[in-house]
Amino acid sequence: MVDLDGLVIGERDSGETGKTITLLTKELGCIHVYVRGGRKSKKSLSSTQLFCYAAFSLDEKREANNSVRYFYNSSEPKKLFYNIRLDAKKTALACYFAELLTYSSAEGDCMNEVMRLTLNTLYFLDKGGHDNEQLRSIFEFRLLCETGFRPNLIGCCHCYAVEADEMHFNLKSGLIECGDCVTNPDSLYDVCFDRTLFHIIRYIALVEYDRLFSFKISEVYQRRLTAFTESFCEYCCGKSFDTLKFYKML
Image: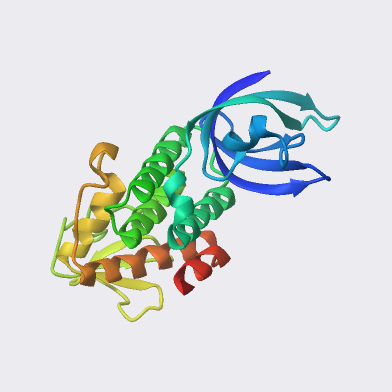
């Protein structure tokens, strides 16, 4: 028996009445759990639906190849994020977050930060009052930072300038160069930041979690931030996501 807290980030039908859910956990990363009769049982319905955060008790079965399968035993809901389901745009955005998490398959020491980031983002999405695009940019960039893709944002890699009127970030090399030192500003991988945007990017990557969602920016800078975090995410993951395409259609 395994007892842990988990967030449901995926579910699919399995068999005539069962379903398999994907849980994001601190201890095990993303795991798949089979729920017997999960599509009909009132006992498990509330805590095994998408975006529910709950305390789970799971049965383990070790296979001949030493892999482990998990089976639902019982659960106690902690947070349902119910308001997300009442808004199609928010639901689509949350599904994109879930796809990013599943694709990244994060595990290990970073999981405390990944779980905290995810729960905080869903909390603000559920509560309202925050711009959806800002939440998206924060989640995209900070998730990748926590899972091994945090770029060196201290300053120019050549002259070590901490900031300048122009700071260039190369998606391919991961290097930051100031406007005076940049070697190939016309590269397809080059992203140019002014002082304000560079400060925002650095803030999202490095600030403590209790301050991560506390900033506000103009629509102009939000559009530029969205363009950067989306490009950064697609480059690091090596693909685009269907859930993001659907969200942008709404």
